[in-house]
Amino acid sequence: MPKALIVRGGWEGHRPVEATDLFRPFLVAGGFEVQVSDSPEIYADAAVMAATDLVVQCVTMSSIERDALDGLRAAVAAGTGFAGWHGGIADSFRASSDYLQLVGGQFATHPGKDPAARCGDETDNFLPHTVTFTPAGREHPITAGLDDFELTTEQYWVLHDDLIDVLAETTHPVRPWHPWQREVTSPAVWTRQWGRGRIFVATPGHSLDVLRQTTVRTVIERGMLWASRTASGS
Image (tube, rainbow, N blue to C red):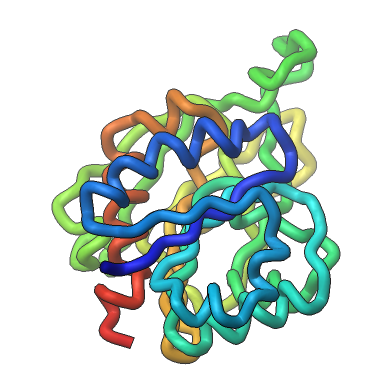
């Protein structure tokens, strides 16, 4: 029986418990034995990590100790899959450059509405935008057969490197109240090979309704399976 480890915590605004609970039944139905930890310190347990085929992380911001980070990096390099969505993986452990290198992309901002239209809550950063699958994404097992889709939620602006394989992207337009002078395209779904391990990241997922959106949920479910050691044969 493959083993999945759900690690959740950090900023409560991303509902780490409720969000991961959405996907736990899918993993169980897929034959995974699922363990849940409320702290990334479990990554320092070499025996647990060696036996884990898939880590699903939902920890926004927060911090990580050196031994835990070393344990995560070593496990992924040895074949443990690493998967997550939104700030739970792309905005985790901001002070750790080694974590950022592992994931390959880091949340920078989510541009907001026209200041005249803002009301002072999280919806100030909810913008209508399109998530477009790349040519590689149209052939990848995570995203093949899916159509481009529209969301009205946070649109992540991501800083990233060239080692990621981008399966979907989203473009930030030029608006009069923003300081940039040309459109900026950010990855919205990507994969990454790290040693013998596979990494999967989807940036949509700010709220439970976004995670329940059919295409978002399908991408995340497929991404977790793809990243798992069982699927990769690593």
